[in-house]
Amino acid sequence: MNRYTKGVSRKRGLKPGSLVHIGTVTGKKTEIHIMDYKDDILKEKDTYNIEDCYKYKDTDNMTWINVNGLEDIALYQKLGEHFGIHSLIMEDILNTNQRPKIEEFEKYIFIVLKMIYFKDDKLVVEQISMICMQNLIITFQEASKAGDVFENLRTRIRNPKGKIRKTKVGYLTYALIDSIVDNYFVVLEKLEDKIEGFEESLMVNVSNNLFNEVYNLKRQMIYLWKAVWPLREIINTLQRGEVDIIEDKVSIYFKDVYDHTVQVIDTIELFRDMVAGLLDTYLSSASNKMNEIMKFLTIFSTIFIPLSFLVGVYGMNFDYMPELKFKYGYAILWMVMLSISGFMLMYFRKKKWL
Image 1 (cartoon, rainbow, N blue to C red):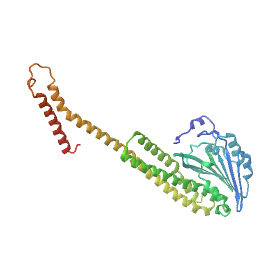
Image 2 (image 1 turned 120 degrees about the vertical axis):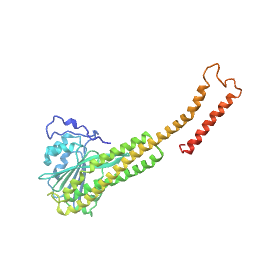
Image 3 (image 1 turned 90 degrees about the horizontal axis):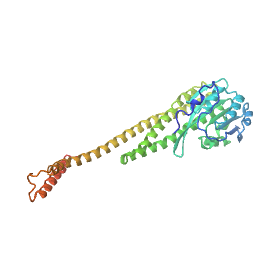
Image 4 (image 1 turned 135 degrees about the vertical axis):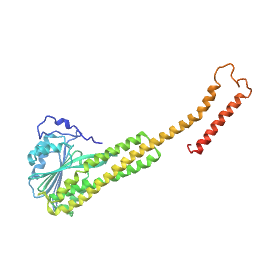
């Protein structure tokens, strides 16, 4: 699980617009993937030099530049200066603790989203930042593109007969957001399988390990809700056609994404309630198990109370106690004790306490 705050204190005392990477440090070199296309023309390139992207600032083709890695501050300084991106926006791109949002400027819009996927059975929430300009989209992500959710979109772009090859920035913006939202359903399916597995386990097994897993799942649901809920505001802004860069004819596609987003949010809230129910079930099961143990110990102790009394009485060291010289006293005492124990067991069974 990612933390809710990841090194934000490092910005303390710095002036606004200072470029500081806040997030997980991987030590990997920043990779840049470029797709430049128009109708039947496609140029695809991988590079490590930001200078290779400069020529795509003013072009008639549609260009998607995907930057993987946020740790090279010098690279981001050059990128921001060349493409005219405000220093505060560049600061937000490097801060992976951002809330999903959309901001509109004169020549571009800035969008922050959360890409969610499972890696080695662990939930990963990765920040995706997008700069959408005229005929150009630059996306920024924390990890390598090998782990993102855009591979199907790249395949569609590589297809010369695909619709996306004939569209502009609005449709590519929609396609990127739609890829992220569609993958939410994949994550939700896996979470649902986990919840169902925990429900079955709680019926037969109550352990601290199971409690920890359910509690971690609850934290994941909270973090997932935090990452997805603001998406409604972003897509609602795009579907209303209030953003100049986005073509009006694309608004109907954003309405479809909005419906999917609402469905995802409703499902997350349902799962949150189910996980809360799992915790209640665990506590109830643990309480019932403890009650069974205490009931057994109480019955066991209750049976031995009169036996301990009898043994205590005849264990006193007086010289002139009755029955001490009686020949069958020992056997009679055992018969009395066994009779008392048997009677109490029969009584407990009749009351269904056993």
